[in-house]
Length: 359
Image (tube, rainbow, N blue to C red):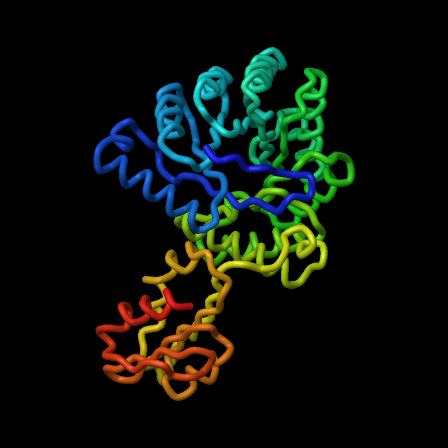
């Protein structure tokens, strides 16, 4: 298992969450190879942590076995039953996430903390607006607290318990489906503690809505130097969550000195592509979609242009290190605006791969 360091001003880490329940059959034979390959691909795209829901002890066993098969650090997401957390800690799990609103009393928390400390495993205190401790939820309903203040109160309460037991290997997340509440809660807690923060908007919706909401919230926080890990929660694929996270993080780096000092220079492939119109003669949408995962898995800092118009494409993408466009049954590959190859459209992917390897 690879080691990921979080907090203390280190670069922000991107994570996602596995979308389906795994069974032992998903770890065996061709299915197991497919599972491991997808995790490897996510890792290559820039995902540093992968979280799994663990609803019962069987799921804990499956996750424990998977953790021994991959180098990606895996995180166990636990609700309701502290015994599941204890079982997960018997395996090479990188982190445990618990929810203070439903994990149980102090004695149960103490048992989890004791075993996690012995194993050197960090714990994320995950507070959600939809599952606040009952007393705080009632105060929100009565108008005595804002939801952001209740999120912070729940996090501080749990941090206090952790501190009583001498457990400091922790980070905190406070998530709501509201952008404003998410931003406010994280700002408030950052004023009161130096605990590392995992940030994101929960239940943010499908691709467009979810990316929009997360982009607004995460950019605001990252630009202020807040946030140590991020997840763009989407009703969409894990790959798109990772891609969105990378783009939001890179945009924050471009626009904020605080983010730039922490993260360093923007890295990876920058994709510019034409939205397509009636002048289109090259399938920019199809080409970009086919190559998207490959671009984000590349260890190169370059700009790639996928343009739909052979007349304006090379000119509009002239700053790109490599670009492609087309006209009729021909495709044109260009570097910094200069056409270097004209090939049959059917050979576009093969020729583009050859030129991409040369960049």
